[in-house]
Length: 76
Image 1 (cartoon, rainbow, N blue to C red):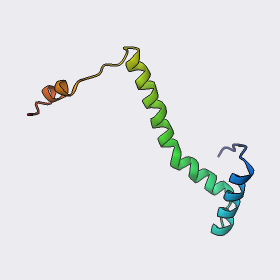
Image 2: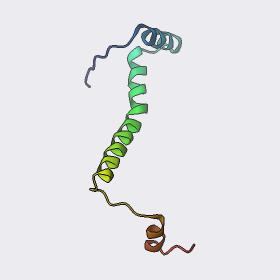
Image 3: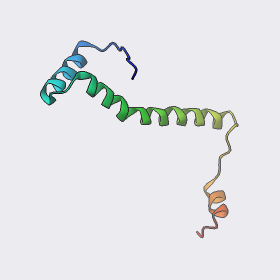
């Protein structure tokens, strides 16, 4: 298991300490949980931004709704 050091402001540290105390858990438990809960969203955001950039640069194919309907043989 790796160790990561991060700087947080006093208000956030106080909130984290209060949460840890009230739940009888270590602060690191909640830091790990927060990272686990948000990492997938962050990965999705960065992938979406990269895709938008590729579309703007003409490197990513896009399809109109009409093209998708035709390809999937969907009736109007």
